Amino acid sequence: MPAITVNNLLSLDKIQQPIDSAILRPVKNITMAPKGFEGEGFPVRRAFSEFSLTDIDPFIMMDQMGEVEWEVGEAKGTPWHPHRGFETVTYLIDGQFKHKDSNGGGGIIGNGDTQWMTAGSGILHIEAPTEAAVLKGGLFHGVQIWVNLPSSMKLIHPRYQDIHGSNLKLLTTYNTGALIRIIAGDIGGFSGPGNTYTPVSIIHASVHPDSVIEIPWEKSFNALGYILSGSGYVGNETIPILSGQAILFGQGDFIKIGANRIQDSRSNNLEILILGGLPIQEPVAWYGPFVMNNYSELEKAFSDYRSGYLGNIMADKSQ
Image (cartoon, rainbow, N blue to C red; front, top):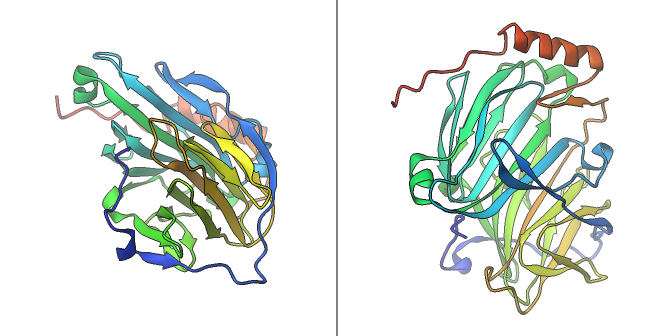
């Protein structure tokens, strides 16, 4: 797993231990993410599909892409397609992906990079494997998160953020039990580079075997976890967790996660994505690539797409 890492955790800023009066967030539900396929046929796990939209608000969905070892010529992506009314966040842990959109954004991300695309009023984009990935194959693993926008921002101008892994804020815990990468939001007074319209926090934690970590979490945010790989336990009840499971936490001040002493052979650590945000608490009308507030807005989105108002496919000048 070549996501951004460090050799010496002692060189990093530390998250402080929760104060005695801090409230541990209870575990409300744990589910196993079902498997499926997306785009041109790459495998995904629908991380939060067993939770309600109310539970995961302000998020709409999250897919774990891979983990898959492509053979030569197998790598796949998605064709050109539209979006409106939300943001897509793609965090790539292994491999490379190429993005291009009708607003002029895009580039190649890989090995700890993030692309944050605000579809807003409407955009067309394509996500494809690089030529090297097609010719050589190799490991591909990442996640894509859909972050909702409130009604007042659904038609804002599209925006693209290219967040290099080297710009993530790296932290450790007071007991140096984990490496924590902040992609967006604030954790214990430390902020990540992602510029968000909807208040959210997204982190990737690598928890060392036989370690227990406590992560402060904004009280007004909800909190979700997803096990990318490895095994461990969560909460004071030490509820077992393993790869492919999603966790819904209740209210409180911090999250407690532990890693088993022995991890599976492909992962030295328990790898977990933790995310949450301020619930928007508005009606959600979601169909395919559009996330609006009501059915008439969905109809308008499809009509605008068919009429060419969501942008034009950009010519590939690299050919």
